[in-house]
Image (cartoon, rainbow, N blue to C red; front, side):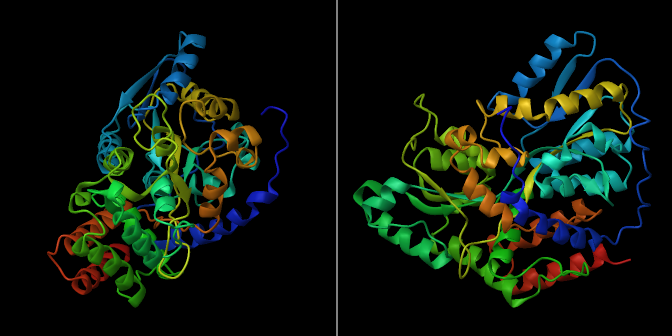
Length: 438
């Protein structure tokens, strides 16, 4: 990997997402004062032990990088503070620590949509751009790590939605191509579920538990039906025919059995396990699950039996949200100089290459997407690149916590039959209008 040429042209289309992301960043109606400049890293002082605050990593890849750092830096050890797997609980604990100006969190592993919120509230510190090879990153990852054109996070990994399918059963059922539309997916399921070997299986699942995954899946459904959650001026646009089409797709899926009833409790890991155990024909999930599905140690029931494609939409390929993570430095942490050095080490191209041996997390360096060794190990990379080129960001608003909570409340109410889709969207429009208004 050291000698490969960085060809940015293959990912030029992704730069278009930066424009969309900037437009959505205007969605905030918060009265929070703008973040102050940290001054090119001049505040990043202090050396000694630090804490890395993150969700669990079952692959062991992140721990391997931390162990390598700790071995080389005995006086600047990194302690992993492991947060719950649930994204909303992660954010809540980080916000609580910031609100009391806690010094025990140093390096924060942030969902890309939290970066604007944390920067605007001055909970994280500006990073010096010259500490990172930003020109070698996928442009959208740099945009997602910035707030008001200032870098507050270092891109760690990127994410786009992928559709995992039981290619062996599709072949057996005479289905030659992965579905590009929701109707094609339903037809493919009908054919597969008629097979004796598919007895007891369900058609499709995503992430529908009442957490961040539901916001993502609903956002993708709306985008895949030709709509959006906000317009270019930052005004909510969920009380629309496109959003109703999207929500009806999900509600009807649960009512018809296309989506299994227990999927209402699915986060990423529950969906991964269900597909891995052979219970689903199709699964919407992130790239990280590829490694588990491909495991050859007997833990995967689908090893060598699955394919990867773009998620389907109403009338053609669907629209993914932009996922991924950034590493940021808590504004209240001690030993910020050590934190910066650790982040530059942890997010380096060399460390990303090493972690590919254990994890299928998508790298942020554009060169990996055309590198022969990387694509041989992770064949989904070209498909993910296609997904990212067509992706839309989730609302990049300062009041993101309130925004995603409102989406989860109303969409979950529709999926569980507590409200009609029409009422849920009307109430969501009102809630988002209030949240984003001055």
